[in-house]
Amino acid sequence: MLREKIDLKGKRVTVMGLGLFGGGAGITRFLSSRGALVTVTDLKDGEALRKSVESLEDCHNVTFHLGGHVEKDFSDTDMVIVNPAVPPESPFLRIAEKSGVALESEMNLFFKHCRARKIGITGSNGKTTTAALIAEILKADIVDKKSDSKLWLGGNIGRPLIEFAHQINPRDMVVLEISSFQLEHLGAIGVSPNISIVTNVHPNHLDRHKTMENYAGAKRNIVSSQRKGDYAILNADDPILAGWGAQCGGNVRWFSRQKKVVEGAYITGDEIIIVRDGKESRIGSVAGAKLPGGFNRENMLAAACCCHICGANPETIIKVLNEFPGVEHRLEFCGEIDGVRYYNDSIATDPSAAEAAIRALKKDIILIAGGREKKLPFDDFIDAVARHVKTAVLMGECADKLEGLMKAGAGGVKILKTGPLFEDAVKRAKAEARKGDIVLMSPACTSYDMFNNFTERGDAFKRLIKN
Image (cartoon, rainbow, N blue to C red):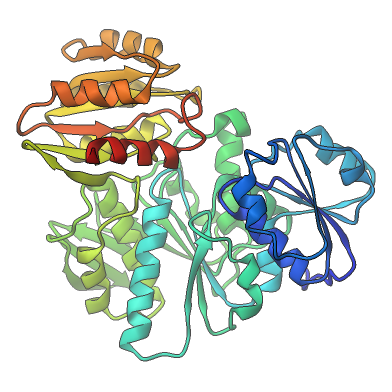
C-alpha cells in the first residue's frame, strides 16, 4: 500500500502544528527544500513559537498563520501535514477531507522517501531508552567493523529525520522511536518497520485514544504490515503482547526477564542469553550496567535481541549495555547532596512509569508526585508507594486526588501537599530527606498545569538541585 516518493514542487501544503520540539520545523524545511509552497498554522501565537519560527528564517516559500487556524488553509490546498498531537476528530481535518485534500504526516512521508532499513520502537514505557541503546550499539558496531554505512536516530526522539531523507543511503540503518499518535497515521498507508520492537502496552493516552483497545490497536500498527523477512520483537512478560505473535507477518522474537524464550533473548542472573534457531548462546553479563531497575533489564534485552539480529558483535552489545549512562529525564541521577541521592524521572507522565521507577529504586524514597492526570488507573502506583515510599510530596492539580488514594491505600506513608510552585515541592522534599534517602521526582502525571512539557519540568528540577 506504500506509495512512491511524492513530487512536491509547486504543491500547496499546509503544515498543521509547528510545535516546540522540532517536528513541525523539520517537515517544513523538507517541504521547502522540495519546492513546495508551505503554510504553517498553529493554535499557539508567534511569541510562544518564536524559537521554532526563527529556526525557519532561511526557508523559502513559507507563510505563517499562527494564533489560530483558518478554514481556507485546509480547503484551498493540495495537502495537509498533520502533527501527531492533532486529534483525529479535529474539525479542520474534516474540512480537508470534504474538500478532497490529501492528509499526510511527517512519519508517513519519511517512510515514502527513505529506502534504508528501519528499526521501529514503540511501547508505553521504555521506548526512548531502548531506541537510544540500539543506536549506540549499532554505531559502535559500525565503527568496530569500519563500515561505510551510517546510523540515523530519530522519530519521537531527538531530531525529525524527514529533512535528512535525501542524505540517507539505502545501506544505512535508521532507528525510529514511534509514538502511538505517529502509528495511527502509519497504519493508514499499510507499512511497518523492517524490525519492530514493542517494549510493553499499559494504559496511556486514553484521553486521545478513548479506549484501551484503540490504544493497543494503534501500537499494533508497528507490526501489522510486516512481511516475511521482517522481525517483530515483543515482550513475552506483557499480557497484551503475549497474544500478538500469531498476528505478525514476519519472524517473531521474544524477550523476557522472567522466563526462557523459544526464540529471542532472556536473562538468568545477570547473564543475557540469545536464542537463535533453537540454540542458546550466552553473550555476556550486565552486572555492571548503570541503568537501574527491572524495567531497564527489559529494555536491554530488547536492544540485545535487535542488535544480534542486525549482526552486531556480542562483545560490542554487552560493552554498550554496561556503559550506557541513560537518557535525560528518565530516572536520571542528578547527584548526591549530604548523603541524599536525587533522581529526575520527569518523563513519568503516567502512573505505570512512576510505579516502575519506584520499584527500581526500592526503598527509603521521598517521592515528588502530581501534576495534571491522564485519567488512568493509579492502583499499582499506590501499591508501589505503600511498599517503598517514606514520604510523598504532592503538587499540582492532582494533589488532592493522590492524597485521597494514598490515605486509602498507603496509610503508612507520610503525605505532604505543597503550594502552587514546583520549587515548593522540591524544597519540601529536600527538607524531609535524611542521609541514605532518595529524592525521586516521578510525578505519575503530565506537567501541563505548571510547565509546557516534561522537559521543562525535569530541567527545573535539576536546576533547583544544582543550586
